Amino acid sequence: MIKNRKLIYLSLLSALGIVLGLFESVIPLPVAIPGARLGLSNIVVLVTIVAIGYKEGFFVSIFKTIILALVTGAVSSFFFSLGGALLSSLAMIIAHKFLRKYYQRTWDPLKKNFLT
Image 1: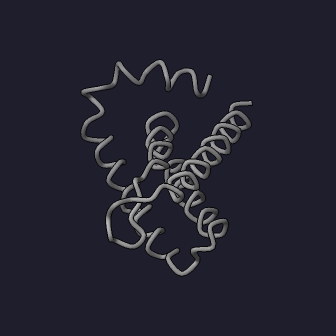
Image 2: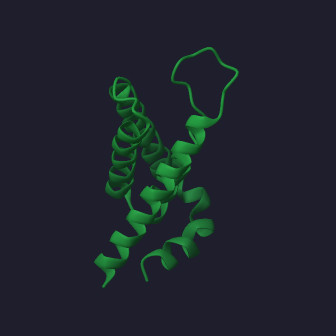
């Protein structure tokens, strides 16, 4: 039962990340850097890392990047997106490991509700 619930949460979080990624690809930025984005879909990866786990956060990040590259047609910039997704996920995991003790009580109800 818990494995099914975890899979459902991961698929919902991945879908939310894809929708946010599509939304942010439509928003024009006043920066002249090609491929620059706001990174709104990384919020979903951060919630996945904190609420479910590190491996699942990497899975959501990689899955989101692959699907967004296929949907938006930006296959040529896939490797840059994948590298950025992996490095940002790694930075979020390291920050979570070192800063967990400062906000543990804030995220406890969310973590308990996700997998119970």
